[in-house]
Length: 385
Image (cartoon, rainbow, N blue to C red; front, side, top):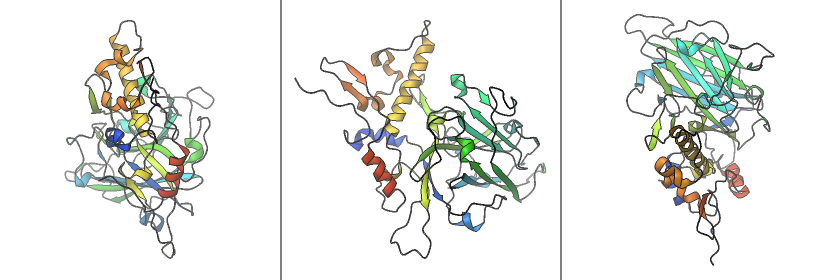
């Protein structure tokens, strides 16, 4: 009797081509350099510390579709850096329509009326206790934590809805934010009015990691999940850095959603070493800024397992909604074409009696992780064409 194959996970047991589809669905990554000098947060995004760090690609429609996306005169971009205390974020927002700022009180629901820049962070990739920041052009700020996504009956924790000591209270302690109007003006309703404004943020790691067990401040090589959103015209416009694309079992395909509270669809933030000094004698350059999954050494090696886990999760949720007894499927066969079998197939293991099961490991081999830490900060990149 032949030996059953070992459970497949994205490591040495399988060829990378088995996960070609998985990697084609992998979100983008921003590789943020360490900054040895803390940044002064004053809204100046042209200061020397930011000048050597590249901008992200322009934001797109949140669904990833061609319609509803911004024009070149509506461009939004960000750049990232970090140190032991903070994640630093700079953003520039171009507008050929009125820039609106009406909310002035801490933790006002900015997105409902104002021009709004937002950042979302999930350090553990868990979709639980993730953090959100919103800021408008006059530096009114709202911070909140979601214990889990709204679609999973998640609840907002913030100073907007609760007082200190209450169950649903969350507040930041060390955050710094600043905004600056670079051209035009706020609340100018004249026909043809244009404006450009900037945001500069220092998000404290201690605030981001609050209410998260087994967490520690980031170090070189660590990855967090991140996304950023621009909201305009009372939520009629939603432009994000990474489109919110997930598996929709009802449609049997991946679909873009107007919903930022799907952390499994966010992009990646990777913490990188400091940039090399111009006078450095080292014969290398370091990868900084935005990359895609074609760069082997800089991508999350557990991504294929993660997208399969979420594919099954969304399929199970839909299966449950279709059955009056409210039960989940007990076998892959029961889920049928609600799952994407092209994704799941590499993870199916067969026992000696011929039965099959899906075995998913989110733990990467130490060899893979060591390789990532050693190579991702340098220009010795391996790329799929």
